Image (tube, rainbow, N blue to C red; front, side, top):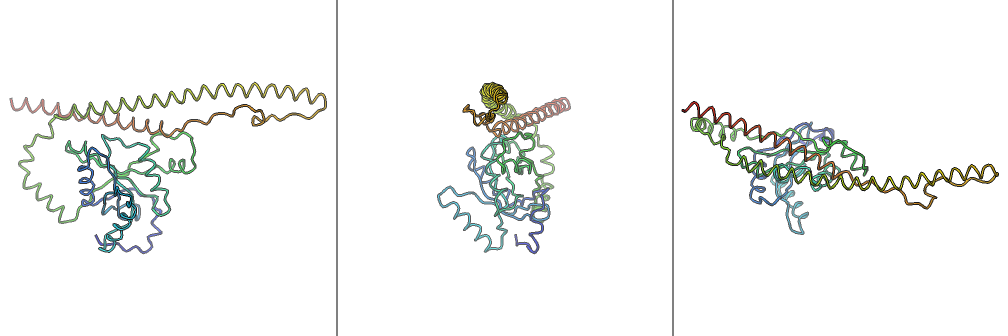
Length: 325
């Protein structure tokens, strides 16, 4: 694809995006790389243009595993520029497993992209699931860190953030060139009769497998969440004991100051730092717990969608069997 005229692009560079448009070529490149490497999770770079509230992705290529990975990426982008292809880095892609999106690796890597001074804060991550896509539907989604959570990470704050305000999904549209769209339409029309008689979408051969795997992931997620809650409970117990010691010392010191004041002497410091007691323990990081809660919600949503789809297929299959009988 030819490069666009980038005049006055800086004026639009900070405009928050509301849509991601990805070319069919980039989709095929992502699908091929992730599918060929499955079940190993792989990643790559996204190239395109961020302009006027839209992020257009026109090309992608895999990350290089060697020690010269950075030089490889720079050289790749340089050569793409030489052949008049958009070579602006606008994000990265990653192969997810059974809808697992909210992990520390994904969050931290996406934070590096959105907080980088060399890249736009509209950078996104395209998550493609090669396992679920085998069931007949393309499972590909675009995400970015919520602005509130991004500021929390920048300030290194340990405050609570709503799980829904960590990752936000951006609407994703696949765009094909005109002649490709016409070819797909002709292909659909030429096989319309065969498609009308194709009952493969009603097959439930893999439904039990996917549902069982989702339940396993859900159970593991809950176990991890229990571990994090146990850590917080231990922290609460420790800090409660320490706080009681601080209170007891402060009450004693205030009583001593009352007596010293009556005697006309200088009062002693009431600062906890001067008490010689242990300071309050730092609270454990919240990010792991928040990510587990977010992913737990996603697993529940996926299971509901899977059960709903299976129920619809059963009803349709039952009605078809009655019609044919």
